[in-house]
Amino acid sequence: MSISKIGISAPLKTNFKAHTTITAPESLLSKENKEYFEEIGAKIGIDSDVIEISVSDLFDSKIDPSVKMYKARKKYSITNDNNVISVDNSIDIPYIKRGELVEKNSPKNYIKNIFDRLLK
Image (cartoon, rainbow, N blue to C red; front, side):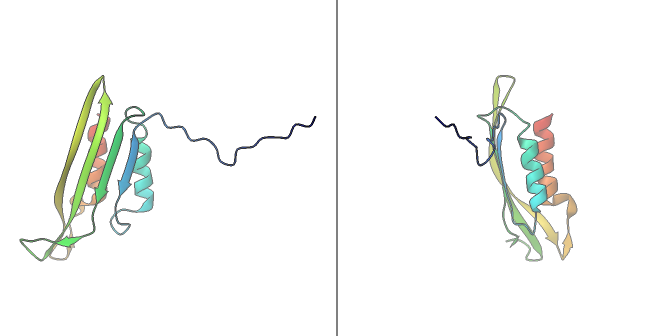
């Protein structure tokens, strides 16, 4: 009788924390930043928790065409001390006003603020 080695083609992935998905155009949020925030999300909550954040492409403001905006949506359900925190909302955020970037309103800062609140 001959025994051959059994191999696994890819390592098994285990995740015991929040399943995190960040979607945004690469022109507004780099691939590295998306991966960074997804890693942070994996350190929050329990395996049944979900964090989803999405950012749209830029579009013209309906009120002032010199303002470019993006739609940001956050949706999460996090278990914290046996309480469940659920949020699902979206907001239009001005990002370019009269040709100037409003850095404090960048998608990266928006997502960072969400995770800062979740980690408290």
